[in-house]
Amino acid sequence: MNINEIIDNPEKKIEVFSNIIKKMNSSTDYEESLITLISEIKAVMNSNTILLYLVDQELSNLNFEMSIGPLGDKCFGSIIDNDKPIAVRAYTTSASLYSNDPKEDSNFVPLKDMIGDELKNILFVPVKIRKRNIAAIFLLNKKNGNFVEKDTVLMKSFAHLVSLSLVNKINYEKAQSRAYEVAALYEMSISINRCETVDEILNNNISIVCEAFEAHRVSVILKENGVFKFKAAIGIDEDILQYGVVTVEDNVLAEILKTKKPVYSFNVSKDPRFKPNKSLRYNRESFIAAPIIIKDEIIGFLCATERNINKPYNLSNLMLLEMLAQQLGENYMHVLLSEESKIKESLTEEINYTEQLQKSVLPTHFPNDNLFDIAAISIPSKNVGGDFYDYIKISSSKYALIIADVSGKGLGAGFFMTMTRSILRVYFSQIDDPASILKYTNRHIYEDSKNGMFVTCFLVVIDTKNKTLTYSNAGHLPQYLVKKDETSNTKIIEELHARGKPLGFVKNEVYTNKKVKYSSNDTIVLFTDGVTDTFNKFDEVYGDDRLKELLKNDYDNPKELLDDIVEETVAFRDEVAQFDDITLLITKIL
Image 1 (cartoon, rainbow, N blue to C red):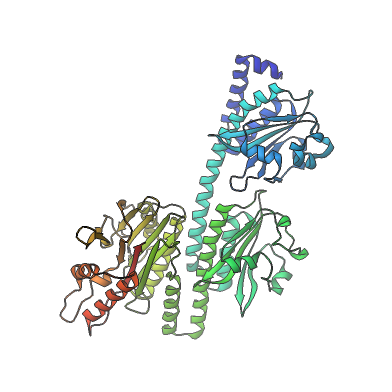
Image 2: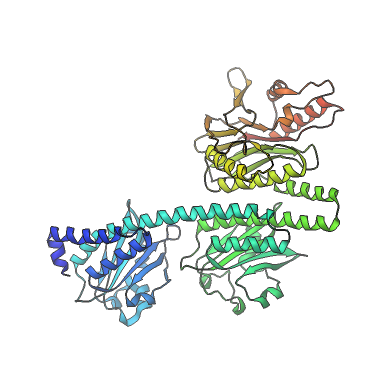
């Protein structure tokens, strides 16, 4: 096909592009449509090979996406580092570039090194969407001579088509990936109902990780008698697993122990944290690992590598792995304590283990960059309670507060509480809209609650950037925002309430958000009805009015306020035993 004819004749150009678009639209598969487009570009441009690389928006590398033509095999799976001139050009410039003597052109060093003497000439054009570079196209070895300026003109038009096709493909893959992430977190959260032994829960959970991360090799390393050992793995030789012991000195695991943060590497062969080790040689360059933390102590690591596709793990993958590692740790402790309780063969000891599990999942540390002062407590009326609170850092400017009350008491309520907390955390990892989170959580709980149990729940998202509280309610009693009236120097108690039925009550319940502004020194008081429904021997209840009067007092910090509320309810009921769980989560905004 004559390129000059296409460029100089608008009708011909429209005909060529229309035919290509028709071929693309004949497929409902975004991947297949993109391949069709790339193939057609190669044919029109009379090139031997065409390459498509994607710009890594976090690392600014170029990652191989696809190729058509014989020279593509030499580039398959390659990554062009962000310090190479062509990578810099690909993610920063709008200008195309070509060379008919690439051996002498330093711009094309990475591709020249990969392809060698077979590379005769080359043309590069960036692919943009909304002024942001997302990809790079390379044409290799023009069949009928050298590349000229008119080639770049036509390729810029083709680049617009590629950008649209890529955006469709990327958006579809993101939506699919998000669905996989939610499914992985949910499957892992309910796996404790299917697994009875430590081996079962670990092997079940790493298979979920394996699928979520498209990894050939996943391992769980846990601390046992002061030594870290392989406890479960997929894709690691049996003799290595039998030896078991894993060193955590002067390597990537040592860094995790020191920082308590997950790590990833897109090229382990160039990463000094990875020591040469023939028995554990990596066939793929990308590696990702997260700590397993229980009660602020690292008890192990969750690692994944050998990805099925030739793309490195990124920060989004890292965040998901961190959440899965936390859930795996909770599952492990749950089953471990369960096994120990079975050995002791005592109902009392079984209750004690459940009580320990429940306490272990309630947060005691509230990292927030000195934005808040937080105090919390949960006092069950029996050994195991159905109340719970939670605190989640959503982003650098958004934080979630949760308080909930499961119907019933004892072991059943305790296990239902653990499941509800896990489901809420799954959805908070994906979205920050309280009403939507309650809607999706309600559907899961409605399906899983076979014995009529339900949960009242109140969610608050603190937006420190916009100084707002967004809250939604599922059948919970109104909560309080305590503000100070500067003119009268008195406290104002603002009720936070929204309509909505308890979780698990009605399958398709709709929840609503409400939003209020806050100021520094405001205090958010979340509590369960165990506080206000406390009664004494005269059948008098403590009630909302007494609590509101107490909230009007001045306190130096939330811990003092929390202690005063607990002491007052204890004094009020006097000789009467505690009837209901009492839970408080008090947050002062600094």
